[in-house]
Length: 385
Image (cartoon, rainbow, N blue to C red; front, side, top):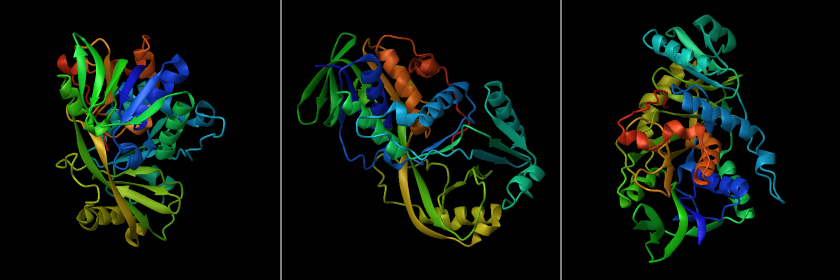
């Protein structure tokens, strides 16, 4: 019997398992229904990291995480591997029209109070720094000067799994459908094939599929899947110094080598069973391409090389992660519902969850405890893209 059973082996589960084994010498079993991770958010994430959030807890989690990513080769090294994530830090650039300027200034005040290295740029300053950007309709831009960028998310997921396995963590294939309980304690997970897997503590880290597992324990986890389409574009345009740009329309783009990745906010009407191969081509043709060409005239000449879709595990109550003890249980926890920023925050959340499960304090995630939902306390994250 393991000290800890995690249900879900994506990046959040793998990170938590890794830190439990590495920092607390726990025996850990991870139960994952799809070891190929073909539909996991971890495999399909845009894998970007930022500190331009509206809630201090998210700023702190991403600050901790990017420091970890910078030294990941040492943190997650095994005897035969030193992971490389290709981390780059060109920043995020949020653009606002006159209507959005007050909101951007309010967010800037929160971020500066938390020590974020971010600058507000006038249209003239934007044009000087990014001459390829059309600024006629803009009033303001917010640029992260350090601590923001992107990396190889699937490589981080693999590195957490590899390190965890090297430390003795077991990864089992199984479809968990329920739990055995005794009073306020969970005693085992029940798999669809009839297996019972017992343990001392239990953690739901099943991403967009966490809600049914919470329901099996009588706990409401308001997490649903929201599909997001990402388009991979070829263009002869050169965009020197290009950060990840968020247009006032909500569409975004960033470079990926010689290519451009672009997309929009997650679609609201799709559920977990919506097929990932159902790419919204009309979104690109009717909305995204015209928006890109208006914002960056050089992007009028482009073509779609490929596209993919992935799921946001959206917390529909306040768009923030649920991380901590499950109400009503002495030995059950969750880390889910990160609403698009789970990959970037997985190092900090995994580290904190491991401390909490091992009986220590976890101040980094205290504000994300699921108990807040029962208390009627919404911790709304306004900056979700």
